[in-house]
Structures are given as structure tokens and as C-alpha cells.
Length: 509
Image 1 (spheres, rainbow, N blue to C red):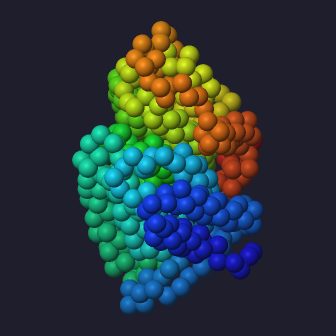
Image 2 (image 1 turned 90 degrees about the horizontal axis):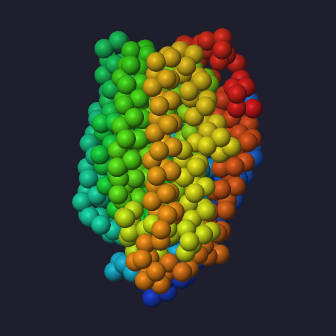
Image 3 (image 1 turned 180 degrees about the horizontal axis):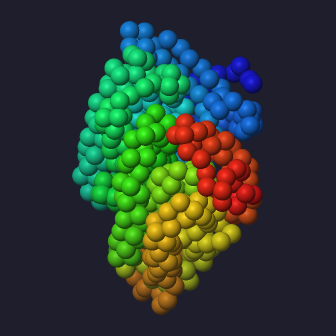
């Protein structure tokens, strides 16, 4: 195991880069863009090193670092990653440079500072890596709250329609969830032996009542962050108002902190309460699948439509978590990664279409494929990945979740399967209304609609399409990283797989 402090560097380096970019001259925006892109590539290179040195069959938590922070509270800067955290950090490191490239001109027309926009993207990367790498509960809580700040300004200062309303709503919802978590964190410290160390708390003995209340405190915060129905209402507003790149990070990564938190904190630390409230998690997840799909069908704004599809997708992740089987759990984490790839791609392509048309309304398109055929083709691929077409990576995730859930709860699995049918409806209708059919005469008046996919945009979408297709046919490398961590989580909960799902997740191999 390398002694290099990967996790500390990965957490601090983007913040250092953000500070450097923020102080670059405002009259030289291209310099800020290049600096941010170069710095994000450095973070990606470090993450590749972290991935290569991670041993899937080694210790559960690797690259552990711990530094004294607040000794009176027993709080430390403790970082460590298991397979679940590793794949999410890798997703962040991949998406940020692509978002920087995709957002190259997003801040140019804003009255705000262009360097500040790209500095905020790097600051957001720092906080997102920190929240997944933290192994100290208090440190996790700090990152959980601090990462709201850069996203708030990305939405409120650089967003589009009703950006201030959306930013405040996003911040307040998340802040309320954070207050529930803070109460639970304090209770955990008091009842857990005056420590925030995750491995130590794993062996803490809580009363039945205390464990259930602590579970609810964490779960409410994570359900709002995810977001699960009915805590979802901030997401369409935030996703619709944010620039496409910011929205891709918001929905593709930030929201996963909620589902990650349930897997890392609720299930292992409060196993009995998790089983007791499993019905609640499954109910919210199933309702979210159907509700998100039905509402998405009726959306007229492309970015809001994609946001509602994510509510449905998070339902699949939720049932995978609360099915309490290795197969479903591995599928849920794999879905977290694949959703980030597919929805990130979809948001970025929607952003490209919107930047050309000057509108996100579906009615302002129609027949756009005749004018920008390559871009329309990429949009079609992103849509097919979003509806989990076989051969794309989300299909593998969805299949594992449904099979793993069916072995223990047939009713939930069958209802969730209806969401697949609805997904085909809202995705294909979206594509048909925007790129197919008779060309909207107004599109011919928009000069920008004559520009097809540029080289910069091709560089943005190509890695995402490649990963979606490669993982669609060969997900084994990622599953091998995730599976041991999910098995360990099931062991923490003292649950065993039914015979049909016991052992290695063969369906993904």
C-alpha cells in the first residue's frame, strides 16, 4: 500500500486550484479556463493512481490517514476509502474536467467573474471528494454542509431562469436536512462513547429507541439530499436553473451523497433500525420511480424533464439499498456511478442544444436533428442510456437491482419494473419532440443552430459514451471493486443473502 497521502491531496488540491483560479485577472477569462481544466486533469491523474493501487480483495478501508483536529471532541481529519467511496471519487474526477470543457462559454455572458465560476467548480470538487473520503462522522458532516456553498453560488450567480429562487430553495432544503443530521451526530457522539471515529462507532451498543431516532436523523438528511419522494421538490428547480455543467455535477454526483450516506452510516451503524424502517425506504423509492416518470412525461422544459427522470432513477437506487441483498446493493452502487455517467451526459448535451437555441422549452425545438444531426445522435444515445437500454451501463445496474430485490420482495420489484416502461415513454417522446418530425420554422432563423457538434464538445461526450458502452458490456472491473464493500455492509447488518444471490454477483460478470 502506498504511503502517499492520496486522499488528503485529492481533497486539498482542488481547493488550492480554486484559490489560484479565483485570483487570476478578470480580463483574461481564457487563462482561468485553461488553468481550471489543467488542474482538474491533475486531479484525474491522481485518482487514476488511487484506483490502480486500490486492492479490491484487500482491507475494507484503504489509504487511511488520520490527523488530530479537535481533541476535546475526539474529532479527527480521518480519510479512508472502500470500494463504494472509490468509485464515487473516480466519477467526480472524471466529470469535473468534462464539465469545465462543456462550460467553456457558460459564464462569458454573465455579469459575474468568469474566473470565479471555474474556481467554484474546483471548490465543489474538493468538497465532494472530501465527503466521500471522510471516515470521521463529524468531518463527513462538515463536508456535507460546506459543499452547499459553491453549488449555491453556481446556481444563484450563474444560473438562468429564477436562479435566485432555485438557489435559495436548494440551500434551505439541504440546510434543514443538515440540521436533522447535526442532531443525530450529537446524539451519536453522546451515546457512542464520545467519539466520531466510524470504526469505533460500528461496535457501539445503542438502545432500540435511541437507534431508531438516530437512524431517522441521518435518513431524513440523506433522503432530502438524494432526493427521495416527497423531499424532491428542490431538484427540478435547481436542475432547471443551473447551467448544464453545474446541473450535471448536482444530479450526477452531489445527490449521490444521500444514497452513499445511507449505505455508509444508516445501515452499518443502525442495522436494527434500518431493518425496522426498510418498509419506509422501499415505499418512498417505489413511489419515486412511478411519480418521477409520470411527471417527467409532462415536462416542457428539457432540464426540468431530466431532473424528474433522476427522481425515478434514485428510486431504483433506493430499492437496491433497502432490499438488503448483495446483488441489489452492488447494483445500487453501480447505478450511482452509471446514473452519473448517463445523466451527466444527458444534461451536458441538453446544455449544448439549449445554448444553440437560446431556450430549454421542448416546443422551441422540433426537427432539430436535420440541422445538427451529430449532436442529435449524441442526444439519442444519451437518452437510450438514461432509459437503460440493454448494452448501456445503466441496464446492468437496473438488472442487478431488480433481480436482487425480486428474491426478497417480488411486489416491489414488479412495481419498479413498470418504471422501465414509463422511462421508455418519457425519453423517446422527448427525443421525438426535439430532434424528429417537421423542422420548426423558427429554428431556421437561429444562426447558432447551423453549428453541429464542435471538437471541444466531441471531446466532452466521447469519454462518457465510451464508458457507458464499455461498462454496458463489461462491468466486471467496477463490480469487483464495489462487491466486497457491499458484502461487508451486509455483514455489519447481520443479514445473509438468499441462496439465489449468495456469493459473488455473477450476473454482472
